[in-house]
Length: 156
Image 1 (tube, one colour):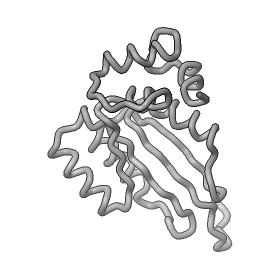
Image 2 (image 1 turned 180 degrees about the horizontal axis):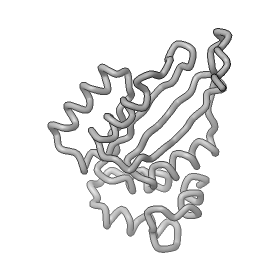
Image 3 (image 1 turned 45 degrees about the horizontal axis):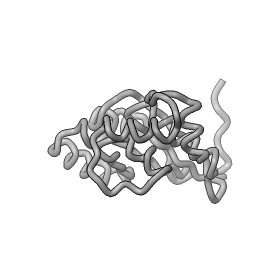
């Protein structure tokens, strides 16, 4: 049975965010639930466990036949800067610009985003120092994909 043809009514605008890892998905979903999304947009956050250019090519293929006129969708790629070479970052930036994707580079360490919920960070801290400071703030061991921990941090 074929799908019924659209009557020309556009779908509500959507924002689709693709990340490299699961931690970012947990964090962004908790943030979305806490803050909400304006203008009746639908926000979808997904991880495809692909890195930089592989993630771009996957998303590009997924939206190759997408009708952006009747189903306006903003596509955002969240990339770990520390796991991607400079040449790949430059290529990725160019490709995203050509495809009208928004590109977001994570700081060298995602844990910085979490610590910023508690304090202003001006010093250059490595990943281990950031984890120790987060543990001091939440009162327990930091685990990268601990759902209750993310909820506690975001709701702070």
